[in-house]
Length: 94
Image 1 (cartoon, rainbow, N blue to C red):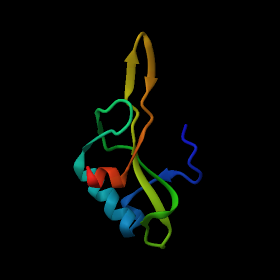
Image 2 (image 1 turned 180 degrees about the horizontal axis):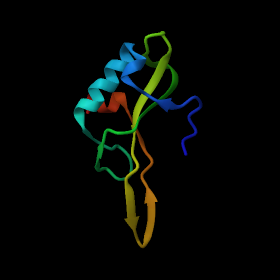
Image 3 (image 1 turned 90 degrees about the vertical axis):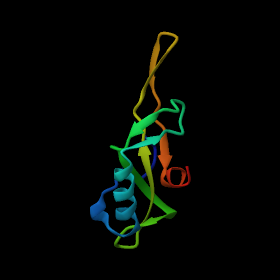
Image 4 (image 1 turned 135 degrees about the horizontal axis):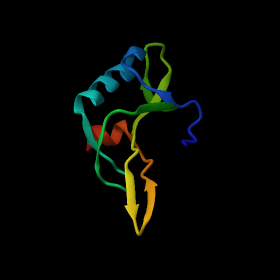
């Protein structure tokens, strides 16, 4: 579970910079996770939370946009999930 207050799914319908970024991310299909799995993940779970330095939606509200990683990691007989959030800035800048 993520502790980001106000977190929600980001959609193209939100418009503005957020809508454009969601459209761009979906066009990538896969991105490199910057979390512990360091694997490629499908761009299926695009989320965001209110943030003063985020992208603006059509109403002017700012959101920190990221792709959530649910990759399963099995090491030493234990299973866990990556659970990392790769932000739009890291995806945009490689």
